[in-house]
Image (cartoon, rainbow, N blue to C red):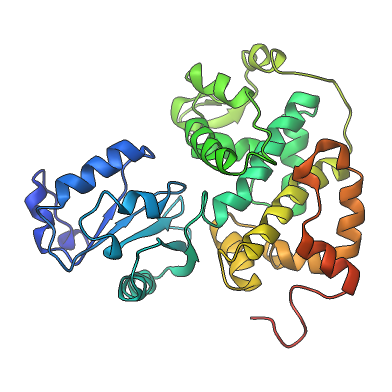
Length: 338
């Protein structure tokens, strides 16, 4: 495999490529500048794909010579272990480009899910309300250990606080700002994260974030310095049950998943659940977030949401969820489960 790799510092190396995948850091200005530099070099029939996790494919395509052959191809970290690839279709992306990138993803052993362009696409759009809610809980008095424990007991591979440090607090902040800006009616961004990033506490890669990481293996440990950051943003000192923390974390995630379906970002419930199973390690025994809703019953979920109505629109039942609660139907009907 190593013999198949080649490296270069000249852009002319891209002149023979069928597909070019850009993986520059999440900065739209840097990305679009690179596209303009590549324009004279790429073949007219070459496909240019971006590994962006949040930035609009439709908007970035306007800086390319051939927007019909520009597409999102979002891999998940760590790439060698995560099977999912989000294939994001921009407003001008043509069918041949979509089909080619889907075939490429399958050829390299990944599972592609095709979706329309929207802020956060599928997985991050659904994940970020869960991530942000964990910070709001922290600022209301819940301990980070209790928050992470509630998530892992639910079946997640790690808790949301630990996940912030793994992906990088700066990456989480940027992605959260993109999604919150698009859905401001229900976004309630916690300022704690921006404070942490400004202090250089970028997570595991910096040796400290919400926790500190010590020793050659980077073992997580409590950081006594973190209290000063948290104290500035603590609004309360409530005591939370594990059940309440679980509901606060996963109900906003479920609601955003129903909105993704309502908006037609993906074509069926299976794509939502598969995306979360393969993209974030949502517990397989629960089948996915929409399967979990079916198991709990839409009526029961709507009743549960009423307990958190005082927290605003992010806990307001969507129309599709209320319809299921009223009819007693499910997202996955018997005999219609992929």
